[in-house]
Length: 137
Image (cartoon, rainbow, N blue to C red):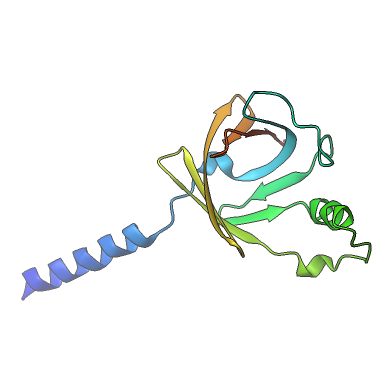
């Protein structure tokens, strides 16, 4: 009887550990977007270039995008109405093997590679583009 009870406790504990999302603590914090590069290594100078948007990764798995990005994106799409900042969505994130980032949005999930160069976070996308973000102090 004790053996069965012990095995049941062990099974429940291991299941809880498996289901817990892995989150690399190095990602937690606020990051300022520096620039993006295309597959040839050239800096992409689009309408978002030089805006210094901030992305926040919380330790409980929230990914918060700078509200100014949503405002600028709406203007780009021809929407000039005021933005309801309370309606801006918060997304989820988790990591795998300290090199793969999965971000869950309302449009599904996206998996990208990530790495660090000093206090710079580098995202690598499937289309060979990269994005560079600086850790805010």
